[in-house]
Length: 394
Image 1 (cartoon, one colour):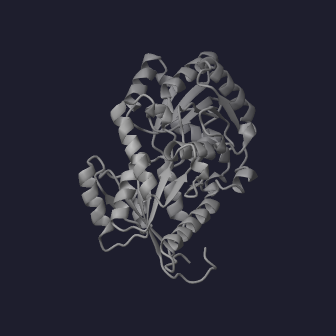
Image 2: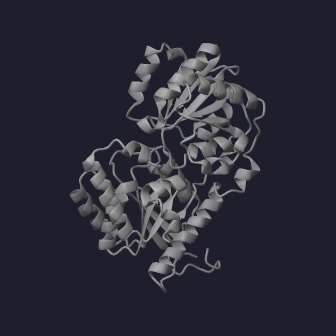
């Protein structure tokens, strides 16, 4: 922060996202809100749903507002969003996490006089977007044009996420930079107690537990998770599967589990706030065969827990901190090959779990303490650049 002097002006930032459910972006933002200097930085949040979300109470308790703006209709959104920006709460920075829709968000922010406007890319959606028709392609082109015209800074969680939203020349763009997620590493300094924790799900201490953490959405490739687990279960009588998360495809996956005859070996844990505990005390290996990711926070968490992971080679290499914990495989490899790798890596680390995260992760920018200091610096520098002489922060 700026020379440690008293605050000249509290920097006010309005974040725009979906909702405060259990997800990578939301988890990271919650970590940021917990660790940022709230005397120097005030964060509020615009969301697209009026339904109560998992972390709403904590967000409000930390002094932030949650403001609903209907994003399903661009006219209604413009009306409600501009009313927020032109209201008594004056925001120095609008920080949008809505991927392509950020083009529209930031064009409105510029119209309403917000001096700092950040587009933040959290995903690489090119794989999913290839199948879309000409109408969708036109929308994407328009949004990217609006981003170029209205963003004063472009952030991305990884190189792939940057290339997706900001183009192949992003590295030469002075407005673009990478900001890695940070996790609260203190959550992983706990004693391993496998027996007691596993009983919650009906697992035995001797069971081999395959874990998956992620919303039930096409991107996460749950059908392949089941295919891999079926192969594993056919060779290991003690193999069980723990699926953590919720989403639109959950009922489809539950039906598939029934059709495979695996109901007694698969547990659905729903959305959870205790991912570190589950990774350390329940899971033996994490399976992550996603079609695409920006930078999966769950993979950083698994390495903090010293939990080995078998992941698709579509996942950005920036997410690898501890190489020995990560096994990369192609989605063209067979489910049997994935199952064999999961069994090998999971068994190799069963007796090698320790009480704390690896030192390499603690010293990296994936540590939330480092990540938040970097974000504070970004906000301070941005405000000074767009409003010279109007420095904020502390």
